[in-house]
Length: 407
Image (tube, rainbow, N blue to C red; front, top):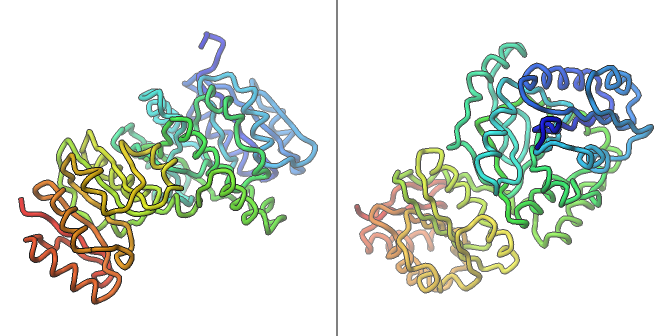
């Protein structure tokens, strides 16, 4: 990076909604002027004065299309000419907050294997929402200034994120070709770029130490509403491209996260068993990190070969085999947490499996499983009672069970 090269290229795409766009741009100038950045504005066929507003801005790179060419295609025009070390796409219904980009840059600079990061906001899916109560925008900015303090313990590794304000390594996004235009005009394009980045060996980080305000996808809703079949078509397209189910891949079972008792310690081992992409055990790892643990190992034994590609991107080790082979494949270490995601009704030889897994726990270690029927519940309770385990916690009328070994 030379003196003439900006640190960050910020790409703002707008299709009408000038009121949102103006607030977005003004907030970027207000809270980013101390950093080296270039602003690339893209008018995507607006008819409300957006083009004229963009043209009035000083020192910006301006792109304008006479008609709407779709979100992915339009953003990529900005991504291709980005000169910064990092490239950001910022939705025009985002309001930047104090220290927003500072915190994202600290995150990106901390590890060359972080390929992208997204801040927390107050209107999102994918478990990316956090609400700071406020009455006026100035009050919200004051609260955000207090909240937005860099804290690596709040950097969560995720399989996928919504990209309302994503920051990427420019070399990486250009190697990818930006957003996959097969998903144009949008929908599942953010899932696709996250999967592509992980499969290239990089991490996808949810930076919870950085808050921005999001009005909530108002600016693109009308565009998506023009094509009612878009979401279904693009979901099927995603599944063909990645051989993965996007909803399942992003599903975090917070019943399990809430069930376990954080045990502390600086060296934590987590083993998951089931057929998932490891999303819930990964979130347990994030939770342990947020509470102060370091050196957290994540391992997974899957019954579904299709999940292996993505498990390899987030696990220290993983394998495709029957669950009964867990002691042979993963018995070389003791675990703080063993999460049995597999449906208890589908487990063969439950008693033998749970006994073997219980023996793989550290003193005070916890095993989470499910009991899908009263009969299975009594069987599992009796088994762990005979093993001297303590029922640590239960949820949903005992459907979720957590047992702890004696310390």
